Image 1 (cartoon, rainbow, N blue to C red):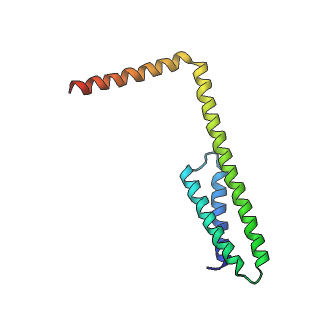
Image 2: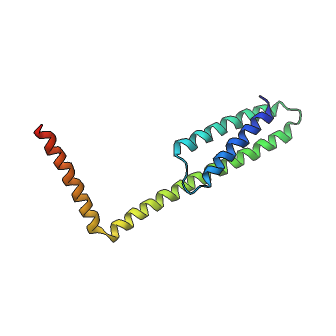
Image 3: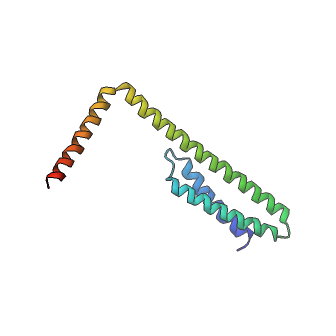
Amino acid sequence: MNFEDFAQKFEVLYMELRGSVTLSELPATNVTSQKISELRRLYDRMDIAASNMPNRFAAKEKTRKYWTDLMNLDGEIKERRRQQERASLLEESSLARRKPEEVRLNVDAELEYRQSIDVRVSKD
């Protein structure tokens, strides 16, 4: 494959990942990690191919832009995950603060249920 082939594959995969990141729900962590790893491998191949081109300076500049775009997207994904995790934790803690009786009842019910299963298992 030559530089343009790698660049085209990179652009397609990058736009696919960029499109999935703009959704309200991020794709699973392993999916985004896998795609970013694949983009990094493509970048490495592109960089090597750019070194062998007659117009290598323009190609190297293009690969630098791709790298910057990739690192920005990676940072955006990580920041969105942190924000989602933080919002989830805040929601859980505020729910617990607003309704401690309900939370306690749910915990008590869960404990009772687990104990009843333990009793049934021990009788057998």
